[in-house]
Image 1 (cartoon, rainbow, N blue to C red):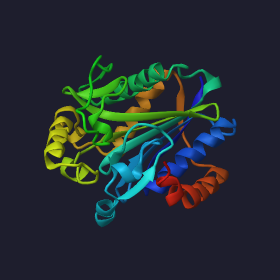
Image 2: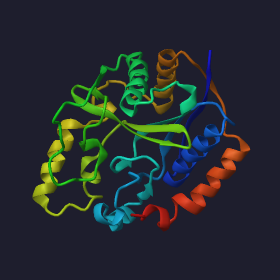
Image 3: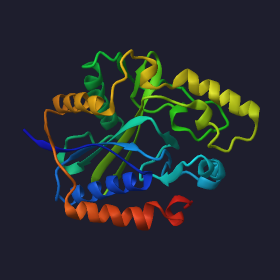
Image 4: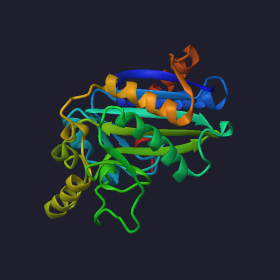
Length: 273
């Protein structure tokens, strides 16, 4: 049975979190480490931008700074997302291992199926649903990830629960995603540049109709560590792999430190167009 490495839940700032994801992906792509599943949280809260998004056009940087919210650009695409009270996962897998489908859409489905299996072990009533043809967010892009449909969403009571993004670099796949425990729509919509109060209200209504946090649907307030335990079980069973606890190597940690300092915390990266 194939083995994956588990990097268990830790909390860090957004620059370090994105740096570790890249360091893990780079070393795994070189065959120096096994496929790696990682769980983490964010402190302070951070707004992560999709790889292709414009920081200046979309984000109210002054408001982010005033509220103590970091802004960092991801390696992956998609729209911006506020990371606050949530559990984030990331998975790094080489393409030549053939653990995930070569199709991005199908690989989303495969990973989502494992996540759903894990959450159902806690009797959390999630389900996997493909994106509906013609389903779109309202015009007037809010830049927020959770207001837009994506492939094979994990939903609960008809609302999006987990938002994920993927990139393929160095012949390897990185997918990471957010499972919010709570969502603060007032805060989220104060972090983006929206040209009128009317449009902001319309976007917020759409957001609340289509997005949610876990604690709104469960009597128990599951901890990130508990959620990690069952998500690991679900992914292990779905992919028929053994997932063993591990740590970053010294080389991975060194690269992550360098990437955090010289890339992810730098204006040259975060404000790039």
